Amino acid sequence: MNVKRAVTYLILSLFLQGFIESTAGQQIMVFSKTNGFRHKSIEHGKAALKKMGDTEKWSVTFTEDSLAFSPDRLEDLDAIVFLNTTGKILGDKEKQAFKEYIQNGGGFVGIHSATDTEKSWPWYVDLVGAAFKSHPKTQKATVKIVDKNHPATEPLKSRWTRTDEWYNFREPVRKHCIVLAELDTESYKGSEMNGYHPIAWYHRFQGGRAFYTGLGHTEESYEEEDFLKHIKGGILWAAGVEKAH
Image (tube, rainbow, N blue to C red; front, side):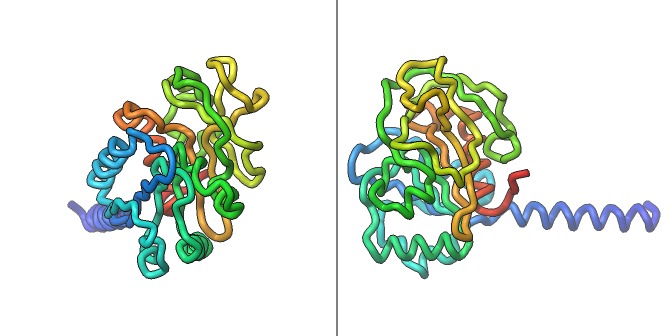
């Protein structure tokens, strides 16, 4: 191996090592507290996220303790995942710590009933992007990917047919959100969103990053390869590892 080739090989090796290190070691907290309906799929989601964390070399912690929302416990986190949370789950001190975490550049990922959480807290509704209103029966529908320039949707087909519980929201999704996926309202029964039905989106918010997907009601979702790619991309973006183009 000549000197030029050896130097090139060394530079490439160092680059790859740095890339691997930069995408590993993320600190992720999965919060699944409920104060209302409790999804049977929560345990399936926790198992899937643990497996994902092991594969990606993330440090993933799981909790339903609201006291985890304190400045000293949040400051080292790259992202917080609200996994099918419901109802009022944070006290005033915990809310303030959460706000400061986001304002200091933290990442948030909301899965499914994260929009059925803290619906009377305007700051949170602005963060997650919408609030749950109702849903029809669980059924098959087609998801239209309208923006593939994001790690949560880039690996997905433009039309994605799957079974889930499809949420209607109390009002249109916040204007500051960038919609990634919509429901084809002709593909199922029960949409109340007047023909335009966003179901996954993201945005930068008060210094932090927030990603939400309405998918993830069913236990089967957490064994579905494309859904897990969707969640993984959302976490990587919220944690600041990958960018939206």
